[in-house]
Image (cartoon, rainbow, N blue to C red; front, side):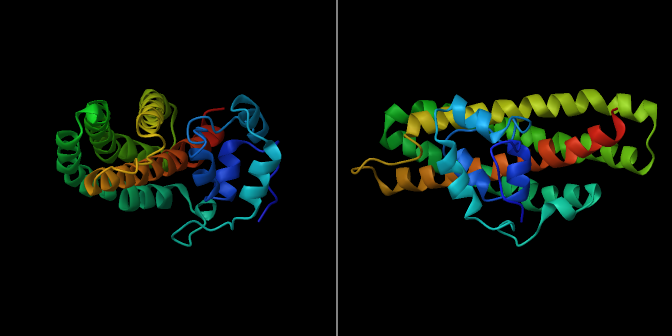
Length: 228
């Protein structure tokens, strides 16, 4: 594993050390969408000691929670991995979580904004994954197997749209963090509130890891190889 330095980009840091994503996420550093920013720049912008971030990140190993090193996978394998691990999880999790969010708001009406953001996220993420599965990923695979100018130009606006949607999702999660005090329940909060906060944080982690794989590995490779 490479030693992480402040001059490395956020995308490269999390590609090399996937668990670094958890460290950065909790500081609301958007490694998934700002992957070209250096770790030093991010630390300065968030008024965080770079030395502390480097110490935490360099203590972690290079494998992700599946024991897979994504950077050695080819593009089509990454697409399959994203669909199997993240798309299927979202399709399962979001509809199941919704009634618990509704029940949470019935217990505490002050959390209506949390519910509104969740419902908008649910619709956006399901539409986003459906578009990737049905349209963009097939176009991308076709382009990778048989690159051409026409296929490249057809693909470009779809990639841009996905990247915009990725940033919108991250901003929604930062707002959820503000409203829930980083998903930390108060001492007197009920079990349902604690459960929802836990699931929302898990959803945030999965979504940002998912976005990182697309923005900073899959789409980056395609652009570097074919968009020059």
